[in-house]
Length: 150
Image (cartoon, rainbow, N blue to C red; front, side, top):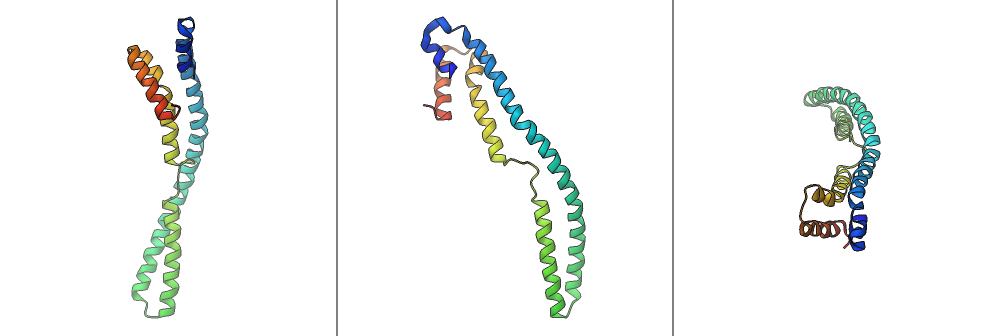
């Protein structure tokens, strides 16, 4: 809010805009670290677990191939039904392993977090690039519109 409020108080507080820009960068960095650091730890754990389950999936694949081979040679309907049921269970387990996520947070949520935090940097980037006041004002209004503040 400081980015929008400081210009309203005139030039008296204008010198603080750079200080608050640096503070904003620091705070957003800390926020991102607080969000991504635990998520990265869980991602590593989940990836290791999935790697172990993928070994199981390889065994399931071999078992399924054996069952399919038995089904082709089976003339008994009772045995065929039992084998098809077993094949269905193995297929479900295989799909569950393959589709197992490795990130604790959905991709859509991660993207939304990143975009929302990048929007915060619009004024800072404009200031760092030395954009004219008219462009900075435009970017401020754009930031308000995107974030739903205005």
